[in-house]
Length: 469
Image (cartoon, rainbow, N blue to C red; front, side):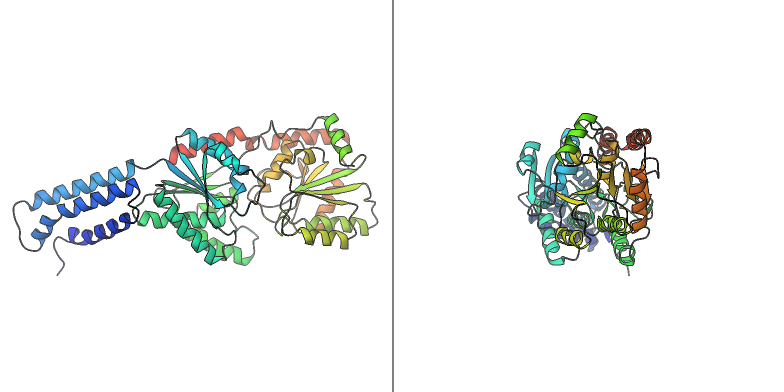
């Protein structure tokens, strides 16, 4: 026979469990208050237990009502008394310096203390560690691996993240990219189950599943994102395809979805280069009288620079004169040795220059005839947006990121990522433009990214933070 009054008997063991968990973080002020509160609640339930066990008395209803009023008071206190500490979580340490400075300023304006967790031993982007202290950020080294298959290291990272959130009384996590997003949301799940309320904001800088992706991406990664969505309070995407995909995911109760224009481009900073400055720069690079194409991006498989090398080789093998054509790449990565080998094998040493990683790409992009952006996948592709802002046409691979701003033959040329002949046609199209057409296209390039300007992106992001934190 079911007990007529199961409530207190079911809840009290849970209280004991919760108290034990908070005692684990007894150095934390919120944890001390919660542990103390549960101790007092345990005392309050003693007469109720006596009533339920058969020792009924006139005080039963009074104690029961008082018990639930106290529980409601505790719940309200737990949500209103949250700290203003937030954790920004990424896989690589230079990410914040390159992409999140504006978010840091917004959060500080809202009164938040910012902790930044990342693998400080993997500076994917060049940055000055002293910049953290100048920005008022508290850096925390967490041994996160970019690959989700490095299970042991990422399991250790998860344990350290949970400890960090509990010890520093963090009330919100803003996590980025697939692995950072996975660990951030798992951390939120664990902390919430331990009774430490944490809101989780996840920015997907391009889901690893998409139209035309390999089968493993569209099965494994899609399912992983679907499951982790249940632990997501806010899901932010940066392109239309990902936003539409997010609408088929079930977020945490009350969860919200947003699409933002990336981190935004500073159109005053990335502006067309003055003609005299352009000529000086081209002379310095040895590009006088030559057609100069440039790419910006890490040397890896996804950035797909190999298709441009194949296009140049095809032009050369077909008898076309490419002696006045130069292709430069600003970027570094584990494909560098392969790239150097391919350049030698294809006989393109006179046409291709590897400039390495450049903190400021404007001197290279601003004097180019066009940027080539051949990525297999992009969440948005800020390098291309910045080039367009400088009035430089883009020869782009068609993907969900470039579809946000590319207009074929209006601000550049669009083809498939693996279409060698398409990239040949794109380069020939740019080389065939007369001066008037180039000027008109340059204006169109600037206009095509007006919706991605930094001022607008900051307003959108500030509105999101104010809405959800």
